[in-house]
Length: 505
Image 1: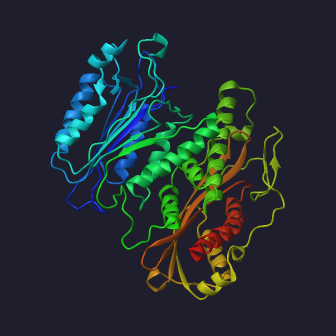
Image 2: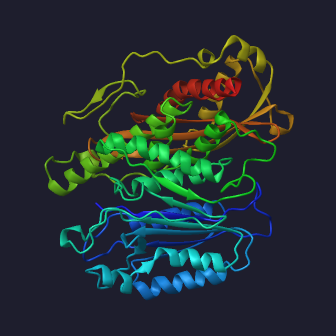
């Protein structure tokens, strides 16, 4: 399947941080609805990448499935917007792209393109984008093209070259390709293309230079492409960047950007994400990283929810199984006690519970709960002993004081003291806790699903560690008891991991 050519026109600031009066602009084009060789992901890629860029301060415009005139007008307007600007200008294209006589072209939709002459007449030359950006005198120009790699015209023998041709990056710019010139890229099996998925994950990591963003993206793509397809897709860049280090997201003031700090910043940037792509990208680059187990747990939880949702859909649509009486009851509003189904004892994760319809929820039965202190070395315990910790909880789980009491007990168990507020604290543990509560429609059993993200901060507000916790359990009528059981187990690991990671830095 065709993958896109991505030329990153990243003209990046010549200083470590973009001046306050400079502005970062981006134009993203995603074309997919081709009559010859339609694509799956370019529209998603353009929209999702634009969202990521906006989150890090870019003024980003997106157009999708456009003809040549619309593409040309958008590029002209982009050139006008960035004239005399002192920030970053980034152009991104996802869609079909081909080379003719050593020059690359971006293919519009709804245009007649059957041979080389029609490409020259009806497609947009990639070099034209570079010329508009150069003419603008913008300080940092990133020409980004992520164009299709699998030539849709090979079967017609009218355009025989695979992939894209190499391009020279003008002074002060960087051009990034999703795979080496002359080769083809994978389209990706999920919402986004393989290259764009990993680029989005890396571009928002604080403290990575522009070169590091693309280097780490290349490494992740190579690893995952070999796993998925048995062949290596190796992205390439042409760079003429100059001056000091430049960043999409500068490092926090005064913070050392060593490998450990970069990994922590990477994790913090995706910790609250609901996209599996972010966690796959993290694991590709940090297969044995500090947060690898958490990333695997997040992915497993997402896959489990997707599997359960598909099962429910098949049951509802196909009628293979008669629904029990309890499943016909409406799901109660969050925070309200669920209607009483068939009684099932409160279950901690690790129990095995089944129904008459041969559904079971299981994990390793009998595995002992890991105590918080087991994460901490003797030196670590000495380091944190008698330090004061304040809890800041955004608790939407319906657990009320249950969650707070559980966390406080675990904190005391590792030798720290509790502070009433952050003003008198050495550390702050900040947590966001949510829950879903209701009747599982597939099996007619009450269930509770808890999700929580925690960050450990110093008194100056700097984050030094983060972790996440997940718990699912079928329950009886006493939902509060189930929440308590879940948190008695999860709080041990939360507290242990936060301070264990702090001590290991």
